[in-house]
Length: 295
Image (cartoon, rainbow, N blue to C red; front, side, top):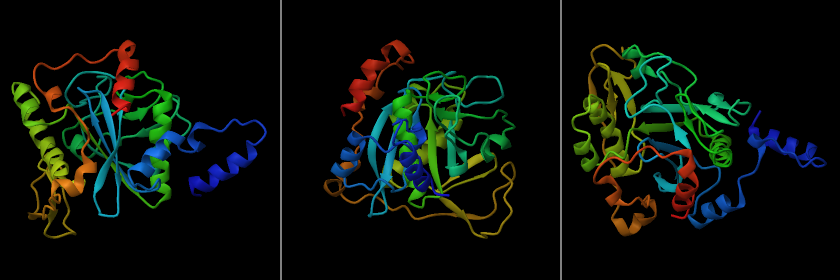
């Protein structure tokens, strides 16, 4: 059953109590107004990027030009661990990598208000024998390996995903990064043990920055193969084994800047220069919320 139909029934039944379950709420009026301002449909496909160091989650919406345009940047209330991927059950690390979320991964009955499962471990993680489960983006503003939002912001993100599924999107991509993968940030972290892994992730980051289209991602030889397709589409692919023959796909570069001005995410380039900021505390969350949502 489509969630939209269930939502309508729940709203009708809730007429007396006015108590609508969070997962069935309509999109807030402010978000609807922003969609209209940016020429976006509520049920258009979404794409999500997560940045640990900046404690930010971005939602992008597809438009009729076939590309994704920046809708909104949400402050992450908290995440656990440090920069670097999750490796094993119990390390309390939030994952980094390329993940996909299907409708079945949405949890309206989460113990953390609302949530969606990132799908960790993915094929890349399993190739590296990484363990763990139930890694999510959720509400409740506390984390033990997840990305935690405030309840109100999680409701808005959940509704955007719900409506994208109702509009026909089968899965949406979530790219989880340690930081905004600019050249300056890569130089700043050049001595990290994860530099090789991050260079692999940067291929996906750079592709989206150049095209505003999430890249096709495969896994072989224990690495992400970005924007490529196997010559034999029926080839059996071992994520830990040798890559079958493949070819890089064409890169559909952005049109000239004036025609694509809306896609700018509004981030301050100066924020990527200098030493890494400390992970924000929950106490400082209100200030970040006001500054980010005012962009």
